[in-house]
Image (cartoon, rainbow, N blue to C red; front, side, top):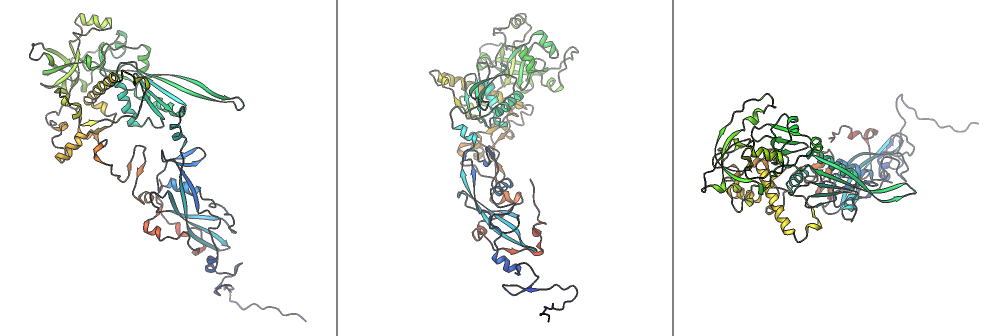
Length: 603
């Protein structure tokens, strides 16, 4: 006799057999646990094995974040880069979490959560999905807290250690003034070439730059090659060696010498050099210095460029250096335009320089009212001068030249009596006592250390010489628009006070005679000046997207995250947010289905 057999219930074609959930009794499709998705979600924990706390290290000096051994990353708060760094610190993501008892955990969304500004905490809300059984995917959101710890990076540690530099760049110029270094200092500040430098030390004839490695020093030398003619010499010193691993420790010293020519120096070229430079006149003046030396004939306006290799092959010594003691003040009595006849044997003067020539009538300022001696000479800056203006120039009649050829040419009358160098502006032209304080612009300076040999008994005399060099440099800046393009000029405190009093800057000296001085294109204009460096203006206002000296930008809360397409939970929402939400089943059983159509903004 056969035993009892189970008879399946009659089903219609295409109808699946249903079973009751073992917990709530709801009819469901058969599964290994015979549990519905809601009951399964109430018992399961998708985030099991995923860390909810981690630590980030930030350098307090440079505000960079530690990524891995010896590497530091500069990124802003709420940025995509910082989010990627935080996710890399969370263990259990991107694989099978420990003690999870299931399949792989998938990250589908991440967003920032507001924290107190000084709490040294960062919070990230993560949303993960996981398939707990065949055909059932659960989703759960939770908050991960990152504790920010302070740790110095290698570069910042080197700044506080003695003898920590690896490469030294010694910049020298064999002249008795520092006007070239004042100009070089402005170029370094504008281009940020001193970044990565541990310290800067100044001497009578140059500056020393200390770098933590050889690469940063080479980058700085490359910058110098692009702005001034230089020649370099490299040496190294053995500090220590390890014979077992064959590793040696060296310190490198780079000696950089700048050519001794400066702006407005007067030269008397050799015949061969003048012929090679387009058959220019032998008496020339240095117009400006870049990676090449720009020369100009003060009587015809003809220009030429001398490369650094040509100069170092046969160095030229200036016959007159543009120092204040060598310059004479003249008053302009009149001028007439000059039309040059073209000389086919010479390089043609450009139309722009040809239109700047003028025959000016000058008289020494100290001779006014004493004698009637006048000088009539051509000048390449004649278009700037008007009757009554004050200019500076070289008096070649009373100067003894060091060069024998130049002295012979002066004795035979082949040289002019006066060479006009520049026009004077503002209170300098009227000999006001506080002319330097009345300038409408100011310059930023590097933070340098003074060498020990300058802190001697002659320190007062050296300081006076530095003040004179700085004043001469500011006069050059006032009279050369092309020179000002390579540096940042800031509005002075005096200009800021006048602007506040006059409500719009009316009566400012820079633009008072703008209608009268239409031909004067070298005068400092207000549109060339930048805001800043006003000490009495209180703390600066933080503007959206404003950048500081290190290139970091500041945003309002949530603006940076919105710009990068990252979710951000504000203060009120963060206070009501739970650390971990309950798991919920995913509709459609497709990973990340509700996030597929989400728009992301990539950098």
